[in-house]
Length: 364
Image 1 (tube, rainbow, N blue to C red):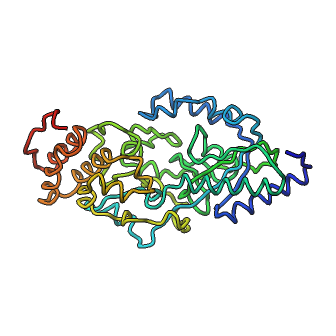
Image 2: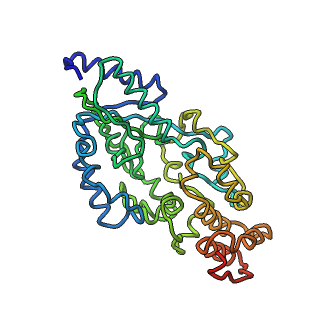
């Protein structure tokens, strides 16, 4: 990489922001990647075991905290935001309140963002290369041990709120984050300051008490964790609190005052396959092949069929006791796995019914 003057670097920083906006990013910021405070918080969180079964969070801690260890010669990190909010038919709150519907976190209604984010970051890197020649970089979109939210705050893209999501005061928190680690000594942006104040709406709204301590998330009680990352049986005391949330949870974001009038997100993330407000009985009837079809290119795919059926069984158990619900639950006993059966039987008991057969382990 050729040596650039301070004036040229300042101009390049402005150009990078404009190129990022031209590529569809909502905002672009630059930081040094100083994460010592965030690293201490991470270690404390891990020591409490609040990461649950997410063993990947305890791996490569040094690389998370020190960008230079992950990508040698990193001097600056370019952070970007990409909005995903879509509520074109105004169904979000209605779906969450309807026990016959399946609620899916709004970020997962459209296309999985990882590849589109990396492609746009690559285009941004290509544009920089066209301007100054070759330089060292690496693009990330939740694809490596990267502390995205602290980096985003350091780059001025928002502040980490009491619900542990990054918040922009104008556009809220309905966005994805991506990073470009670079060896460019660019001018940096001022970090964002906290504007949560005395507000505690997110903590009060959390169904399971996962946010009882502000700015600290106990993932073991978080519905997003329980329905997505947790790979085994959901702890029984927490099942009734999950309601009809079958993939993720948005409660803490829905009540945040900064999310009062969210701007529309990128068209890539518009709802597909009727996932904005699907019927529980319909999605519980899906075969493995239908699950693969309807989740193609979606964040839901990584859940897998077994955990999908586990989650929907819990949601049915938290709904209305109808012949349709109990018949559907009984009809799937023995279809998927012992873990799914455990949740089906729990759901039947919740609805005042009981299983009608005993499934022998060898039948799976």
